[in-house]
Image 1 (cartoon, rainbow, N blue to C red):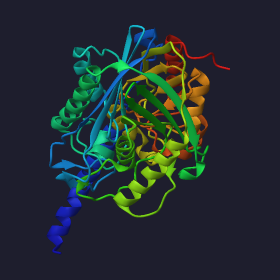
Image 2: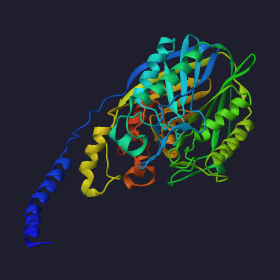
Image 3: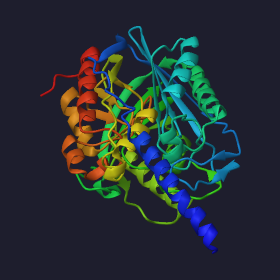
Image 4: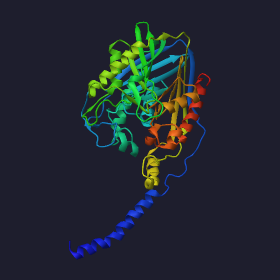
Length: 438
């Protein structure tokens, strides 16, 4: 290198250092500011008791191929077709003048934008209260979350057509379900096999419990709702197909066996991984689905006497300021907080649904087993559901967050997150009349 060139590069060094320092200072400036604290607010509620009616339907989703495969950080595959059709499954319940819809989408998670679109369409069909959940498959299509952190970490580049595909499928399924209401009885049962799952990050171990609620009409089952906690990550990364993973295969198996439209709902799966390793990819997902179907068959449901209670409440709560201290090196903490602040919601919705003896609390994220138990203790819920109506990320206990352990290493917020959601859970459970907390 010539001496003149070396001199030129040396002359640029102060400028480069100054530019880097300015960029660091700018990124480290507190752009986030304080976040508002508010008492949780009831957005809507409905309560009824009487003879139970139900309708159910499923509709295949139509991803905007070619589309990014969601679930993991880059690099991501692009899919041009589906291994198996992705589905939207919907259930509409009615008792004593109350009407509530539940829709399960075979997606990684759902967003407030998707939820609002689904509710708007459902309201035109006479279903004004709707719970929207995701099966958390890590091999479905992405592109439906506009937040930077989501686009970077899981769902890929945002495109409105992905949102439209999810809303269209869920909306049509709810419309068809509302149009097929009929008299039903409610049957509930649970069974557990702790060997099916394990904790991937320590903390409380998942118990492998599967709870099924059967809505049985005069001609047979109309629908079945299954609650189970386990990450749907059995399909390998880097495949050029979208795939519903084990939840979609489980639902299909149940439907083929005559159990009606079968909705899969995730429980407290934040640290719950599947402990089934027979086969690879789709074969492994099908094998685990068969294991779960056999477990469901072993849970012989008992009929609940009428009249049946149906209640639903939506509660909004303010979220704490994001905290990136467990996600990035200390010297980039301020920049990390700023990035999360620009990408994180300031509010979240917590819902409570009471159906006969079932008292279900739904959270817009991924609660660990311990966090789910804390929420159940605070609200009296029989089950805590995850991935409902939005996504705030992982939710671990304050003790784990302060220690930087467990799933808190993936959590976007600090230890106050569980407290905020717990306060909303108590309001929601009170609004629908959950059993008193012991």
